[in-house]
Length: 123
Image (cartoon, rainbow, N blue to C red; front, top):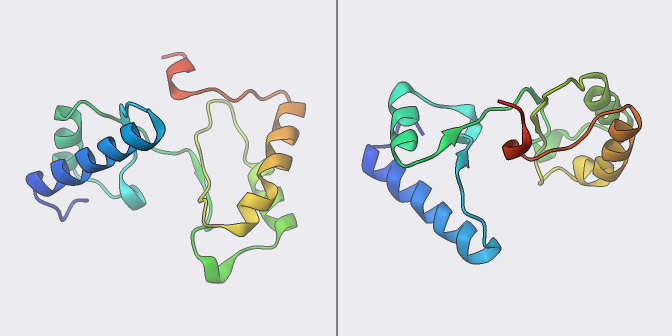
């Protein structure tokens, strides 16, 4: 995103906004910069477009489809790093993640964690 012009940022973000509205009836108000790459200018531009930038507090190398960890390793890494207020970044292209997601959610809930939308977080 930092390499894009203000006009390119606006075009890409607003096209995504439109798709989310049309396909899911969801009005975007939060944005995560692709790859977590941002600059003061990109933050300012997305803020002026009405978005709040939200980053993650946990991620691991799950995006690389050629280097997927085995399920037991991934599960341990995810569960060992749970923390209050966590914003977990898991990529949907990871077969490991899709296979584990139900188990991760159930185990996290059994550990006393709750899942909330960003709107439900205490500010």
